[in-house]
Image (cartoon, rainbow, N blue to C red; front, side):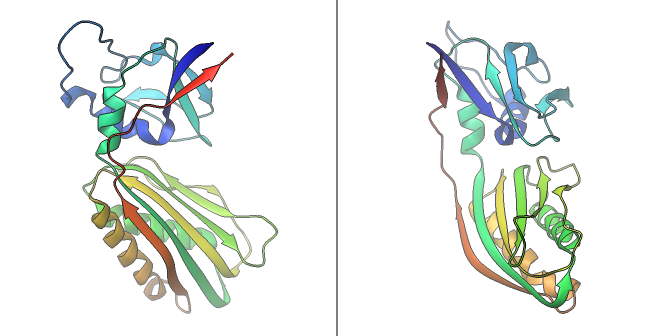
Length: 221
């Protein structure tokens, strides 16, 4: 059995961007995996995320998801853990209704852009929202943002107007969880003013900071 350590796509933008300002413990046995935008050769790519070096960091902003898996086995992942500990997390669900129907794509783009602006200048590690129509057949609209200086991008679209649907919001950013809560609350509350006839009811919201995690490992044959 070989143990492979895994970084997920949503964490890399923040964790790897911090390498240049993180101090490495002294002593032998430490291996530099990422140094600014260098080090991709130390990883195998799993999935279709477009990993690349850009602006002194390793980033990905397209694809349905993916992992960078170290080619060697390691016990310590301080960069990953320290980067993760900086993040505030938020999960929320919102019920959207409109008597004659609204454009799911336009609402998602407006809401994602508003949350992005309200969180500035905090670095966003991951913002994903999906909208599931109440009368749909499994089709959804989805939008993603994996870095603060990018534009939120629709990954799935709905052409037909939506009269009712559930919006799920997942966010991670280098900010206090309360800042995430306030940004999402304000952006959701502002939707009816931007889309006449639309009602937005926040049904559930949780915000927290998990703290420094134990690195994830996977055993493979």
